[in-house]
Image 1: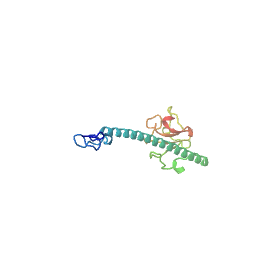
Image 2 (image 1 turned 120 degrees about the vertical axis):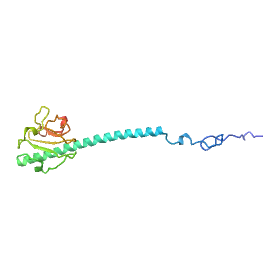
Image 3 (image 1 turned 90 degrees about the horizontal axis):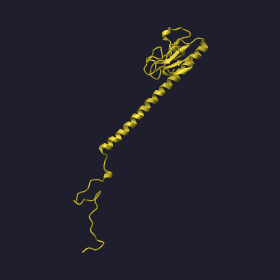
Image 4 (image 1 turned 180 degrees about the horizontal axis):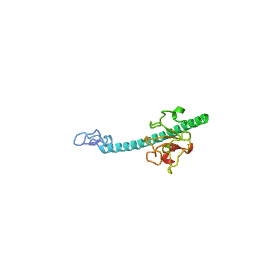
Amino acid sequence: MTWAGDQRRLPRQGRHWPSRTGSVDAVAASERGLTLLELLLVLAVIATLAAIGLWGYGEYTASARLARAVSDIHVISSEADLFHFTSRRYPSSLDEIGRAGFKDPWGNPYQFLNIADLAPPQGQMRKDRFLVPINSDYDLYSMGPDGRSVSPLTASESRDDIVRAANGGYIGPASKY
C-alpha cells in the first residue's frame, strides 16, 4: 500500500547519480577538458596573432631605424655647415668634426665626401636617376640596412641608402629622391 505522496522515484541521472544500471555517469559535458580540435583551433588563433604582432614590430623597428638615420644625418650636416661657417671650408672627413667612426643604426659608418673643396673624382659623387650629382657641397649618407652602396641612387645596392641631397634640402631614403 502506498500513500499518495509516497511514490518511489528512480534516482536522477546526471553528474553523481547512478544510472539505472547502477554505474556512475561520466562527468557532465560542461566539465570535460578541451578536445584536440579545440586546442588546435586556439593554437592557430594564437599563432596568427603572434605573426601579426611580429610583423608589426618589424615594421616599427625599421621605421625607427630610418628616423634615427635621418636625424643623425641632420645633426652631422649641421656640424659640417658650422665647420664651414667657422673655417670657410668643409671638413675633409667626419674626423674633423669629431664624428670619426660614428655608426648608423645598422652598424655601418656614415659616409662623407667633400665635393666643394677637394674636387673628388666624378665616380665617387652620388648621382640621381639622370646621373647628375645630387649635391654641390658634400655628400653625406648611410649605406642603409644592406651595408652596400654605389654612386647612382638608382642602382639596387643604393635604393635603401639614407642620403642628404639637394645640398641638404632632402634627407631620406634614396628610393624616394
